[in-house]
Length: 178
Image 1 (cartoon, rainbow, N blue to C red):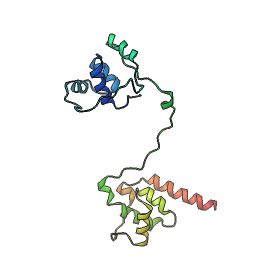
Image 2 (cartoon, one colour):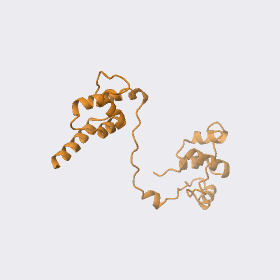
Image 3 (spheres, helix red, strand yellow):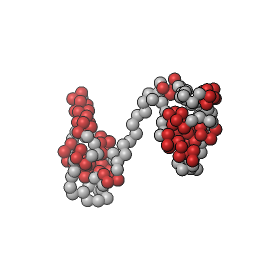
Image 4 (spheres, rainbow, N blue to C red):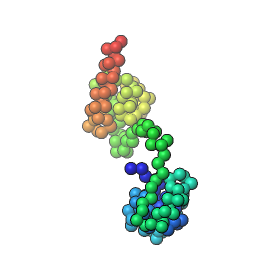
């Protein structure tokens, strides 16, 4: 299911520059028909610039003209073999909600106490979504706050049991090879 880039902005442009039906625009942009009608009325996305799907190689003029003449036809997004053949994007660093950020030092201390021999600072940092400097400071006892209690990073929600197990197994394999 390929969607157009910036669907609302594309819908704005199609409303302003074509005579397509709201249903055709909503099906192409994957928006609800009432939302498209709201855009046309100026209630939704007011002040947003339209995004030209022709200049951006998402539609052709011929496709739009053909669909304007026959309201039962659906707009077809131009398929790009380059975009479709791209490998999936690697997941970026995970987002930690504000409510969990204060739990990171406690989780780091928990991992240090239980797996200090098996996990490196970088592995602990990756599991908790922290930095190596923070892990090092907690390990040395120079962290800006005194951390007295420990909390499991799995129970807090910073990582999963599988992530911890994979990190430990990776280190064990490395040690067994040496």
